[in-house]
Length: 181
Image (cartoon, rainbow, N blue to C red; front, top):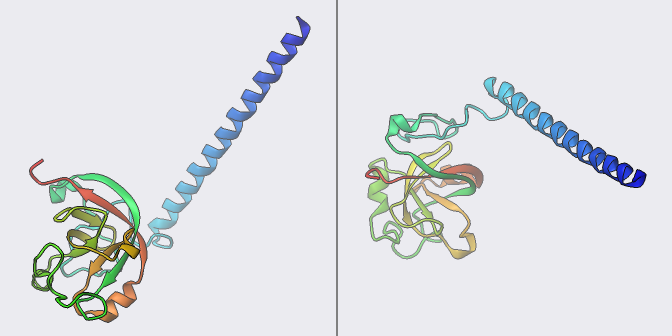
């Protein structure tokens, strides 16, 4: 009877140690998040990013993040994840023989000139609306080479310098629900 009691006490002690370690881990994570948020208010860690995603593109600085709620845009996010985002141009060497005609058959050069944000990706169906951190709301209209199938590629027409400066970034991307449902 005595050995069973010692065994139970040992198991309870192990359980208490695990709970304490989990609690300490939780405190560390929460403290780190609080520190990041405090630093973020001064713009040192995340720039102007405040946890929301950018919405509009026109007349906005591409380096800054503009936060607006789904109430302002009328569209809710289905799911959000971080992905690699790069940029491409409508020039030979980056596209096929018809650089302005996208995989969905539309003229993305004309759409881009009208201010529409177009992306190429194999991850979402055509016409899917994506909200991309620091970029805004974009429409999937093109496909990307399978070698880069894990990325979302931002169309920048003939702005080669802009595409190079954009580089490859890990950004939060949210798929938007259809406006009708």
